[in-house]
Image (cartoon, rainbow, N blue to C red; front, side):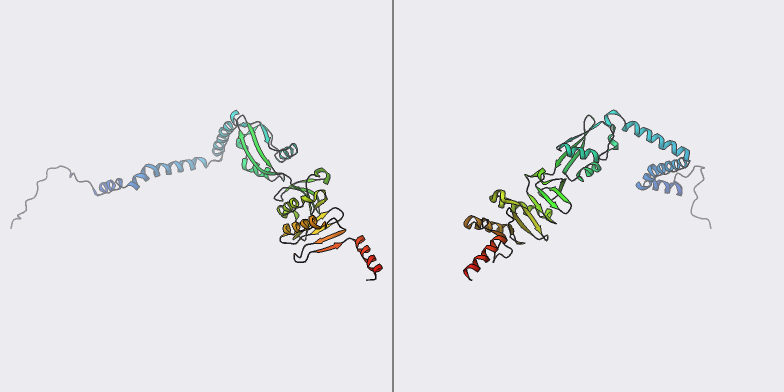
Length: 293
């Protein structure tokens, strides 16, 4: 039986449909990730491989490094990048000298060789400097603006005499008290840590005039107010200012400190105690003996 399906006659022309591999390649080219890898990833990988092979030779590597260093040096040493001098504003002559000693810079030098944050840190490490601003000014000037610490009191401690500011921070050491006779005196271990409280007590005691000699920190807990004639006002740990104001009020009303009193003990607020000096005590005992009491 003859087949009812008629075969297409062969004409000799190629089939226009794409091959399987061609079709898959066309599909891959439509994928964004594949196109990116082909355009970017492949050139980068080839370039990296070529660079690695080229830089594997030590001599060629040294040549490249030296060329880069020469280019960098030619840029860094241009006149517009050179720093020729250092200017310090806001500091005294002594403090300026101390800053220059702490920064042994040899000018001229490139601004690329200056680590400004490190320079600022070295300056603020100096006792007399509270704040510092460091910048390179046009014209090749290393500009340093200093906010110095202002001494507010003289602190006598176990190592000698030192100036402290209103926060108790160390400012500078001094040789003699007379060099800063205009500043109040505080003494004792830990006195610098309680400078704010000491300043309040000193301000309250100013009504006593020249009689005030200074404050002594006792046990790191409380203050003694030292007056002339070897008189001492012993203040409590808490409410020291109020206790001192009570003594000043008693002096105004009854002239307590004008008498032969060696100590005014205010450590117990409910029971203030007066201690007479030795001469007054002997005189009092002598009077008692004469009176037969």
